[in-house]
Length: 407
Image (cartoon, rainbow, N blue to C red; front, side, top):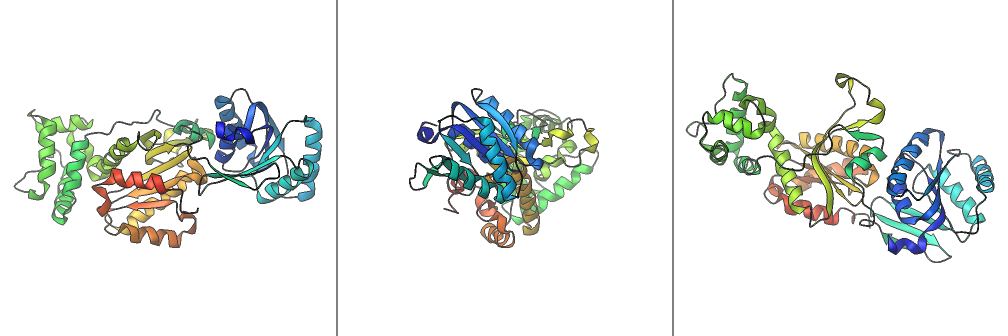
């Protein structure tokens, strides 16, 4: 935060829009200790402003908060409101700042021009969600471009709360289950025969007493059969021993894991491996965000609930990964786009999203998605068959380059 000290102000105005994350970052970096933060919100973003203030208070209790409603579009009304507001606040001779990433475009334009005219020596800032750089105009100098990627950290639970959600299961599970078995299952899926025989065996789990795969019947499942034997460790019956190692009472209860849950566990293991090196400070599997307004709903009525398979935080940026064991491009594309929408709901425009799948030509699918869905450009990745064996390295490279596309 010290590198931003020259830009910190005694009074910091924040324009509140539907994505509160840039304002949270601005409050951490640009508000002077003991200063006043004024949250300018429209009628529709008042609740967002309250949530934002709560998170700011938690992280910086020394700051004072003030809420002011302004019009979302009318230039004359906005200017009049700003004039009255400045008079009511009785601002002293200290520095004044405006962070205008949030709010509507008219709010940003007219608030900027009014404060620029009344306080020409103020500090005016904008946080870019593509490059994670702060653009600062102050003291009559040229606009400064300052990286913010590692300047502020926020945990998953606080990030979700900032956007009006809470985690149904917190803290998230960080420990991958049966990593050796997951790697063996991946090896099985490296061949067409392995994929076919694996699917055949998984379908047999609907039977009353499903056995572990017989090597005579399923020769292509050799790596998985060996991993099952290691999990059973000589215990009899081996099926029950494997089920218990997976956390189930009986083997057939693990059909979700065998159908694709193993890929989620494999991905979680890859994230865990790179966490320290890539400064991933919070991560886990099976994030289930729920709107705070829906807390009192019965569980069966939570139709808007959704899952994010694997999530990771680097600074204030969310990396969300959807996992699906499919080689069909259309299925992988559908999962990625669903995850993209959901990740932005809880991570803002700064979120980056990937799908881990078994598609053969991942770069081709990625280009197709970015061409058809313009808002995903530079913000999504596809990791397919060719990237799976070295997934940890692929994730590392993704995090390193995720914010360079728009530079």
